[in-house]
Image (cartoon, rainbow, N blue to C red; front, top):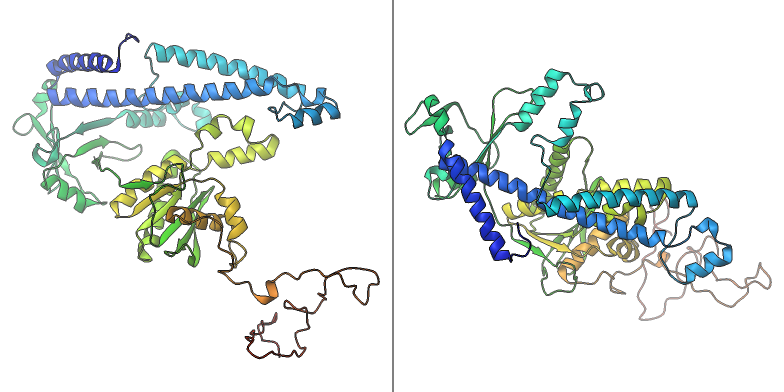
Length: 502
């Protein structure tokens, strides 16, 4: 496509190209199947182009970071005075040794070569798509490592490539005329012209022998097909299982409320809320009242994202279901989450997330947090259950939560304190706890130092506090004190055995 054309001209050229392809396919099959094929291919092409652009942006960011650090000398070539002077200039850090610097130079050459290939593919509008998955295609050459036989691999390959998809519209019977499913579960397909001889019903249709049964959201599906709304169906197969599987899908615009990257915008939740902190392996959940104060006990929801992609996706959906059930049991309708995005961090993780084994563990932790999957799944399921969703700025939530919200509460972890800050941001409150609202117990109060010398330590200045004493006045628990008129009486604290002091 000519790059000198404007956006409207490019859109018209692309539309004409799709119409030409559709006419050619219509002559060989039918207009409906031609439209389904063109839509599926165009959707896959668009996704590949978006992924290609993101890959190029990530490569450029990684190359820029490497060039900045390689422009500085290695630390082992500098004297202590030079290292100190370099640190004071606040320039980008160099690498620790010349050997590491040499390895980074080689990596820079690899990234530049990859960027050149990706840019050439983008300019020529070429994408690389493997129907069935590139990983499964490469497994064919390493069957011994994958512990698969050729027959088992062939079955997985055929199932991965078996996919019949058709989108419908609201003016068609039961929302889809190409693949039609009646309220009783009868499935019928409109066959293309080369296969019309296999039809067993009128109008070149083939009625399947099986009956479709939807075990999830069947009532909503029935309401849509009987209410004149569109429906999309996908017929697929699974390895090791007989028969086919029918998946129904429809579009629903999620009503997601987001504060974006500015925590002080006008969009606020002036009501009780559930704050969620996403971590590696679990979700930390905290319930807050309308004033931003924690209520009840914190909740931990484990998320195991190890294993295959299908298992990871199921674990994320199960965790989101538990979170929604927790919110509904408390009678709440609002959830606040962090607007996390680790795309840049994963791209430049080797340069910005530490070195050695510690940096590798941290990068593995960041890579294991399913931020995009959780955000997309949660927005859809929250909209389905009528729950409002707020996405807030994640900056300093763990640091400020640890500073302001761990001390006044017992057995509160750093992640649970971060969930409190997330919920307060969605409500429009600051992270800092207002001074004096939560009173400190007398035995937990700090004792101010005095300039008096203790009797047992001559010429030593220390506080009046001695072992075996408690309270703000550092008196022994069983000492008598004079109560002044009009002063409130402080209830004595309990001892280690749970009994009050006498």
